[in-house]
Length: 330
Image 1 (cartoon, rainbow, N blue to C red):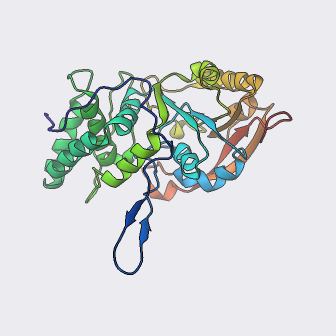
Image 2: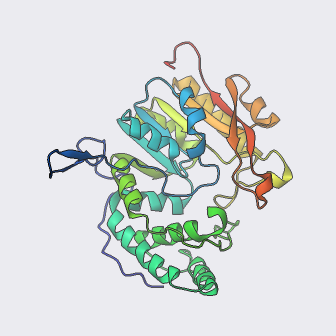
């Protein structure tokens, strides 16, 4: 499915050129009438709908953040709600955003470097999709889903547009991959989904202008902390399942099992030895409590957003782990 859009200019693979201020686009001044008004730039917020995203939990998490954060990393970036929160405060001088999912990383890099090309591609998807009947929309969705980057040559803009189109039109916005790395969530039934979302993407572009976006495994985090002189890391990994029916961690092929959780706890222990502050979210279960027993472990109540039955959605207990101790400036 060819997508007409502007040419994607080349850029280094690890980061965009930082802006001079690192704080995004300046406010616009509107002149006219008896007074001069200043338009407030749109606050950046996640442009990807991500299961387990922290947008609705920020009110519970932000009081637990360190008093000052400057050099930040988020190794399971997903929707990036915590990054946008910290960026909006104006605290960050440097941020490293990483994920193992190539589609997520590609989408972030395209929003960072060439948002207008992405917006054009998404607007084309939106026009084609919204004019169709219910059956036509379903067929269009599955046609886009079947056209996978592993099978078809596509550049970064086309790949990012495919990812965001599927994310905004699939069932519950659930990004799920099978063991072969293929997205397999079925079509959703939204009457009028907003697919292009140009203002939101432009706001995210401004926020990401001075960030480093990487495709990295969490096991490389200690080296990233050294390379980027990090002072705080927020970790939001795939949660350990608390029951057989809650076992969703297939954001990328391979999943995230007990061994991964154990290795992540070892990475956090290494960060603590390095003097890097960290905060981690995970499910409230015996495995996670045991792995982080030597650190501060708190409970927070979080909304459960993913269940095929609305009656089973509600609030559940989650854990927040912090390495609060003497010598670290919390």
